[in-house]
Length: 258
Image (cartoon, rainbow, N blue to C red; front, side, top):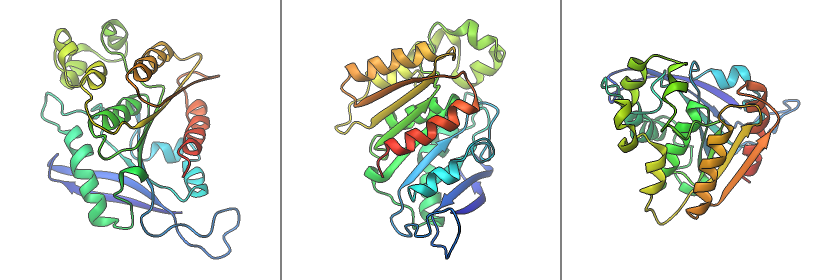
């Protein structure tokens, strides 16, 4: 695998941004790795970080490079700070960057990556799982499969829990006033209720049995199934922690059946 650390200017965000890209590489006698990586029309996984993470955290905390190499899968790891993959109320358009500009930048700088829906996937953990589901349900023409690990997919009624993490000004800077969250474009409930695309992405949900977000994951998975989505819902031993995410991103990549 080749690792590209990309630093580019975002016209959307009007600032420099960073993202990492893992790309399969043909190698000669490299011990312990697949040596014949695909070099054109490469399947690609957008892999999103959680709160406190950045474009490097999946590389530092998991064996994502090895898992991707086993399947000749390219992995794109962008950073959006604590923006929850939204266009925030303070005019930081992270959602627009992620859903519109980033694919254009990838096509410009990495033309060997596929642009085919059936070979394009998105995954994330925690806040990144929220972002992955949002991409899958609001941009289904681009993504054929969604992987959400330990994802906070129920926001209504969670104000008290949210305020234990960050103060109200932070959350309202991301989502707007708490009292209007039910009608916000960032409410996962509405992504599902308003879904009207002909093609539905397949969904992989996993959460630890000791994770406080387990109930939200199971509830949202049930709603996805009721809405006709092909949904795989898993529980595994673990909490909201990297040992769980490392184990389950490996399983999720196998689920992609590349």
